[in-house]
Length: 320
Image (cartoon, rainbow, N blue to C red; front, side, top):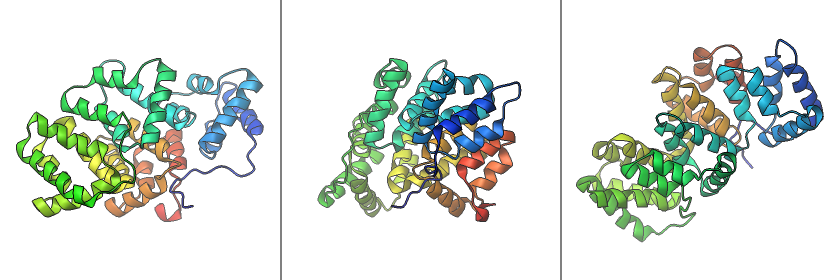
């Protein structure tokens, strides 16, 4: 099978040896950061979890705890992030996006617009286990309006899968078109119901029909008719339906260039997509923006933090 990730299971994997090496790297006054990078970015997530188990039985300590204690800043965020199973990592990011003062709406948008039903289900379970809180309730209390309604719909994880009905597509497209004309509360609700509940395959057809009816691209229409986080979320859903790796390439480009390297976003996307589609994201990035992701990270980050990001990005010779 074709895997669009950049991180694969290491051959000849020996968790006990890795745990020993990590123990050595984390001991003493000066932590061996290169060793941490060489081990943790070159093992897949399942292998890292086995290393953490070996580390625990060897030293009686928690590897994540030791990483948090020994490391700092963004480098710490990368190394610790690599240690979470994917659903726990999503839960961790959502929790931190909502706790404390203010909410990181962009994080909520990026995660909930892009995850599959299965990923959303596992993320809700992980959230409950890690924080003894209900993800839906937290989203409900931290957001408002039609933005909240749409997030609440997405977090159900009940999108239809693989189902298409061409006759229905024209009807849905009409509803979307009307929703962009009328903009009443009722229309906003119908709009988000279609975008959150129809299968990706069905929405492909709907967007084509929309173009035929309105002579306008779905994203342009949403941008013209709506604003704020509601609009950003709807656009994110449309972009994910069309080409998910391209959506993440766009998010990375904005994070790197528009926000003066928004570290949290760059770290989250690289880690979360490293075993799914980061290779494809890299390809889309290069096609779209001319420069490689590898090149842009190299230019904006520094030190061991940069080394770790580049190791996850796994740039090839043609990327330099």
